[in-house]
Structures are given as C-alpha cells and as structure tokens.
Image (cartoon, rainbow, N blue to C red; front, side, top):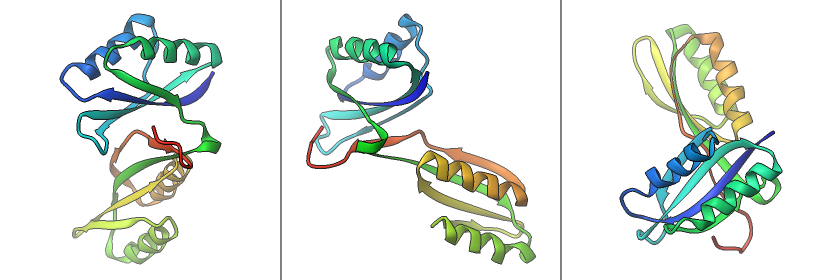
Length: 162
C-alpha cells in the first residue's frame, strides 16, 4: 500500500463533492486528504484526493471515478512527473530571546512570518510533505501551540494540460 494523489477534474456545481466522497465510502476506500478549488474556467473544479492504496485499488478507484457524470478526467499525480505542495500555518511559543533563532530557521525553510505577538509567532511554509514534516519537527523545540495544514494540491509537469 502506497500513498497516492489523484487529480480529478469535475463540473463545479452543488453536490459533486458529496457524490465523489460517497463513491469512496460505498466502496470502502478511505480518503486521506482532500482539496477542492476552481480552475481557470469557473465551470470546473479540481479535486486533489490523497489515498493509501495498491496498484489494483488505485486502478479500480480511477475507473469508478471516471464513470461518474460530473467527472471530466482523472489522473494519478506521480512524484517524478508532478508538482505536489502543501501549506502549513504554525503558531509557536516565541519569547523575545528565541525570536531571532526562530526567524533564522524559518528563513532556511523559506517560511514567512505572518504574525508576532508578545509571546507567539505565526509562520507559513509551502512545500512537499517531507519539508512540512521537517519544519514541524524543528518548531517543536519552541513549543507548538497550533497547526493549520492544507491537504496536497498538485499538477503534472510539462505541456500536458489537465
């Protein structure tokens, strides 16, 4: 079983998300992560769905998705042929004496400081899952107070258009 990312182009109207989620539920498959947003044409949305599945299960899921009326196209985003990113917003304890150190570490990860209060800092970082996990691990030293994390979004490299 491997983590897989499916990119699904769907018609953008009410009930599509419920219909797709229901397909997974009825078949006994779990959705690990889900991100949905409109694309360049507001009549369509891209669903980025994270699953844990083997090759056979992935093929079955893709076949079932392709049978759905609101689904236009389904592709698996393979790591070597795709750009896949997450966004993390993290609040850490930041006493005055630790702020420079936190900022230096944030710079290494190309993270942005979104907010500073008397005793906290809120940082934002974008990247692959491994980068996000590593940043969280480094921030644990300062005391994690809150984390908000997106699911994966992605697209294929090159000139192929969804």
